[in-house]
Length: 153
Figure (cartoon, rainbow, N blue to C red):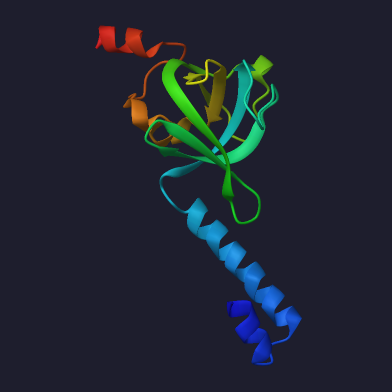
């Protein structure tokens, strides 16, 4: 509707395209600056889920209760919605994990999906409070399960 009005008012097609591109870039900037959104890598380790494979998928992630949403593309539209059942393990990434672009010591969290599969979400170690917010996991040493961390506290 807005595009039609602009075209009738004499705005060229190039001007309308530049306006739309500017709006997409603005949405990306607003999304990235949101404190609830963080840079992540996601992969499926057991089972199947549409859109995920065994290789790390680069994305921005955000939590909606215990549902993890991935955002991709120029305007960062929601690409995948992962309903997670439980947090299984939090550990530091090893060289064999080949996680790139998240700093020197990324954190990998293993989750069970509601559908029965398993998924891993990698995040920068500085993003851990945001990346594990629904589970209220404090900063702690690597390779500990959530139940072991609660028992030692």
